[in-house]
Amino acid sequence: MSERLDSIEVFVAVVEAGNFAAAADKLKLTRSAVGKSVARLEARLDTRLFHRTTRSHRLTEPGQSYYERCRRARDELAAAGEELEAGRRDPVGRVRLTMPIIIGRLLIAPLLFDLGERHPQLSFDITYRDRRVDLIEEGIDLAIRSGALDDSTTLAARALGRQVMGVYASPGYLAKHSRPASYEDLVAQRTSHRFVGYARQGWRQPCLCRQCRHPPPL
Image 1 (cartoon, helix red, strand yellow):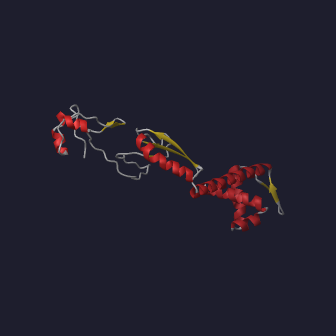
Image 2 (cartoon, one colour):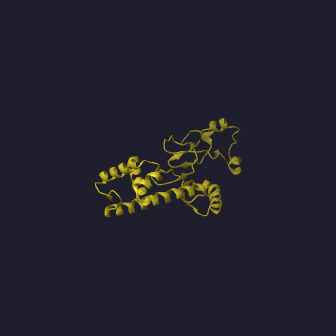
Image 3 (cartoon, helix red, strand yellow):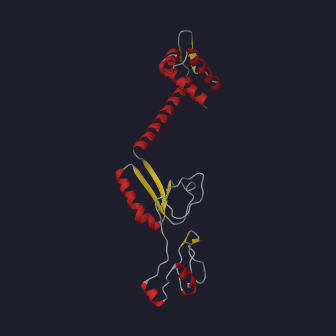
């Protein structure tokens, strides 16, 4: 592939320089190397690109058509490189994100509004959902998630902070039931307390209710 691209580059240089000698000077090659590169390209395409004489050369009709396509491809590649370079200087384009509903709306969305104001050419497509999604399958660029992460060889993760979960009770509930003095006391009294557990994506935070009888992890 590299040799093919090199041959195309030499061919375009010959056309734009006007002759093989000028193209050789531009590419820092010998005139013989330029001639052989063009000959290999013609052999691979099974098409004569130049009409050659001892004193001049000019493009054949297929050669002219091939040059126009090569020039457009070169310009597209150059434009793509400039676009990537511009994106490194100033963020441009759309970013697709997914994040938990509460964390996303209360903590992340305000940050994205500020980011969007600083970079007007940057836009966000946000999906609020608690279930985990396949980022690659659904075309997601960035996911904000809480909890343990599965091992992955294709995704990169960075810790943003800590989220603490606990067991809480209202003053009215504690007025009617004994108040546990410690976590161990709560575990010992689990049959006398009622709980509401937290569930997400089929995973439930273990609780101390009579049905589960499993204490939450510390």
